[in-house]
Image (cartoon, rainbow, N blue to C red; front, top):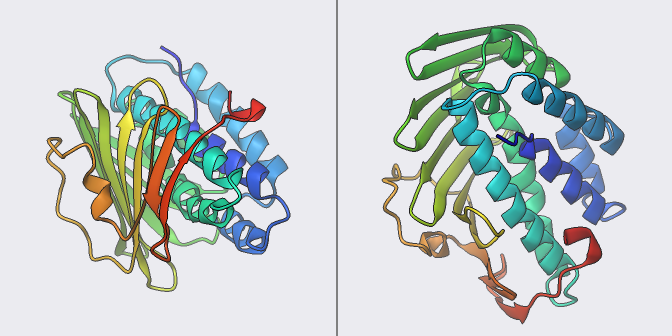
Length: 273
């Protein structure tokens, strides 16, 4: 089974699109908090983590499920960022995906659930984490560690082999990450809720086609923690978010953060093909 660390690849994709933009300092600050100080560091981390995954291939694990979801979601995000950033009327809207991509760094342990303590320790060490411990209890997993700022963190997940993974994360004993992903007849639905260091919450919701980079992403800042998903959500459920974008075939639609409607035809760039 093909394995990839889509989490970090998405970060690289966003950095390459927005190199030199007005948000580059914010991007650098966020990466530094995760132990990555430059795009080169991120590339090296992605390559090292990809090698770790390829050396620890398993089947039927939580890692398999989450890696497949993350890879499909990465294809969707890549298409949307490319489409929005190269369309003159929506270039600034593409900045919203900086937050989406950086949020995914917090999900790194999920890519290794079920692969053993060594795999988890090696992966988190790439991001500067220390004192990593990993436990499994059936299909439940818990990782504790000190992050690159020596803050104690815990990340746990429960995997259902029928096709779902629910994760919760905390820093300094305060829960600040909640994530769900479910397999569906068309691909996946998922959501990620995070409380930033300044106390501001943000919610990302996803509908992801399993094979061709189609789907929908919703973004709501200041949101309360959402109700749990069921796996039976409508194919447009992220449209309830304040900001959302969808791509199906070559058609891109959405609502920007300032309420402007988006509707145009996407012409892929060479980099996105």
